[in-house]
Image (cartoon, rainbow, N blue to C red; front, side, top):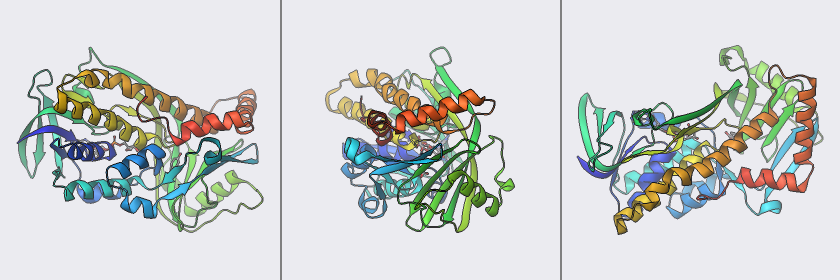
Length: 392
Ligand code: APR
Ligand code: PHB
């Protein structure tokens, strides 16, 4: 098989890239190691920036999103026992949307398959090669057979544990990483959202909690826990008691509870690998970088990377120009590092760090009050939260 672009991975990065290329008349195949049902039900974060929603609309993939996504003009924060409202719409005239990542993935798969773009499930890429030649290739296993795809370019959209990043030679690659000494226990529950907006909650004694949602009837909540914590230690009662304690008492805020239908612990990590290109291999999304989930930048960064990559590829096929390929790493990393800083900042401002002393706690609270108590501070928060420009 020969295609112009071989895309590894059917997450938001790979699927958005396939769609953008198809609309520009460039052929691709998407290889996905997992089954379709698995990727369509994998529970992940679910916050889309305005720019990501605009791109879903521009690529004709927003029909269900427009009906089902929950639109948020503002966000609530609790710090030092005080409730703050950040009105994003008033401050910056932008908003965010809550729509589960697996719903985004379902819509993207449907759009690609309907357009005849091949998305091959249970097809695991084992090897990429020929990166320094004009005819790179990907070897993959499918239905018990090994197959080779040749192509003009490879897009490694295969997430943090994929094979693409490892194909960048050690001599050119540099990794930057930070692990956090805590994780998030995430739950889905048959419970209406506690408030119409998301609530980011810093509790000095007990740690961070986040109250978000998936629909008017489904809550998604997160609790800061130890990084090696097992969800098995958390009974439903323990979870609701802890969420109530971290939320605290506020007028007009009553914790909404219900049956818990899913729970799992996620580790927190910041990671960037550069460059994001070697010869004819380009890496995008989680394959190149990871953010801690505070602020939910992961899916949005995956989408902005492939937006930049699709423009480079489209221009190459139209005019033969390669300047955008040469600028790919630098263009993406400006936005990636902006989001890295924001995710780290939100994470360190909102969580209790093991080992911090009384001074650190007071300083942290003062920082939150400085940011949330000032229009300038809130504007900075809102600009980053609603998303930096797609191409910076
Ligand atoms: N061959 C084929 N597919 C692979 C391989 C491989 N060798 N290795 C991994 N994959 C697939 C995974 O099964 C997954 O479906 O690549 C896909 C990568 O998708 P994501 O992990 O969703 O990554 P990305 O598209 O970059 O989106 C980033 O996902 O992890 C979240 O929080 C993250 O929201 C962010 C988003
Ligand atoms: C989510 O809805 O899953 C979510 C929202 C905001 C975050 C993280 C996760 O910061």
